[in-house]
Length: 336
Image (cartoon, rainbow, N blue to C red; front, side, top):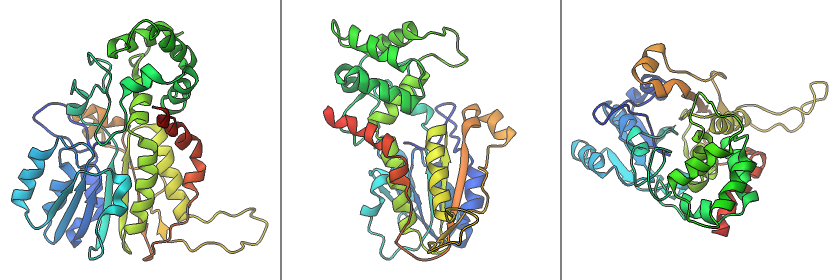
C-alpha cells in the first residue's frame, strides 16, 4: 500500500501533509517511521526539522532513485527498508525513541499508470496487481480460484453487488481461454445489472482483487498492532485511509485502544483494562477544499490519530477477532 496520490509525473502531492505534520509534531525531534514511503513526501517533510530521524518502509522497491537522493542529503538521519509494514516488529528499534508512525494507504498515480503492475482497468495484457513481496498475482486468482471463492473476494473486499454473476461468468469464460485485464473488464460490464455508473463498472472488482493480492487487510491489522506496540510514551500513530473498509478497521482499532467496554451502564465496571492510548478527536480530519481542488483524488482521504499515554508493549484489542472473517477470505490465497 503505497503512500500519496499524484496528478502528473512532475508534481507530487502528499495527501493531508500539513495536517500530518501538525499531528506528529516533528519540530520536537525524535525518530519517525514512514510506513508507506512511496515518493517520499512525508519523509522529506519530516526531515526538514532538525533532530529528526526517519525510518521509511515500502514493499514496492521501485522508489530507489528517490531513496538514494534522500540518503545523500541526510546520510545519518534516513534509513529505508524494502519491507511490508506488517513486519514492523522485525526492525531493530531498541535504542530508538519512536515518536511517530504514519501510514498513507493510498496508491500513487504513477503506480496506477504502471502497465506492469496492472492496477487499473485501463491496463492491457496479463493481470498482475502485485505491489511487491507477493505470493501470487491477480492472474492466478482470476484463472484458478473457484467461483464461490471469487464471489467472497468481490463481495467483501469490493462491496460488489453483482459479485455472484461476475464470478460465475469468469469461471465460464476461462474454460476456453486465459482471462487477461481487458477480458475481465468485458466480463464485468456484461455481468452488471445496472449499466450506467458514476464510476467505472470495474472499479469495485479491481479494488477487491488488489486488496486480496496484496493481503491489505492482514497488512493493515498487523501493521496497526505492531505500531501500537513499538511507539514510546506520547508517541503518535497517524493513519490516512481512502476507502470505507480500511477506515472501518482503523476506526475500530483506535476505539478499542482508547475506550473501555462496559457490559451495561447499570452494572459496575469490573476489571477494566488500563487505557494506554487516547484519541483526541473522534471524527476524522478531512482535506481542505483547496487541497481537493489541487488534487481531486484526495477527496476520499481521512486522517485518524492516537496518542500513546504509557510505555507498554502489551496491546489489548480484539481487532483480529473482529475482522477474522476478512482474514479468512485472505487465506483463500493458500489455494494458489
